[in-house]
Image 1 (tube, helix red, strand yellow):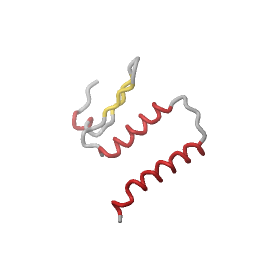
Image 2 (cartoon, helix red, strand yellow):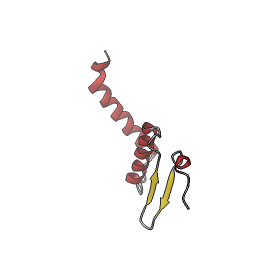
Image 3 (cartoon, helix red, strand yellow):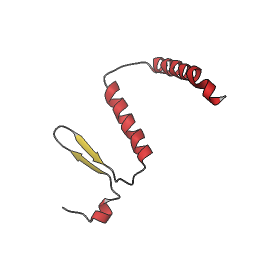
Image 4 (tube, one colour):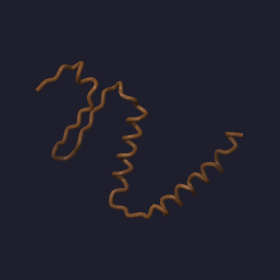
Length: 77
């Protein structure tokens, strides 16, 4: 079934094959939001199967933020 190309430009297309999902977005979509979604999906893929306590994640995030701030604080002064 072929759809009107004008109508299709505004639609997200999701295809499922035997090996993968293929998701297509119109080029005019908000690229920053799309990248955020791609980053989130990549994160979920990379962390699948890991069981880590939220408190450990929070502690690591604080350490990363602290280290980043120590390295970059002078840029904001």
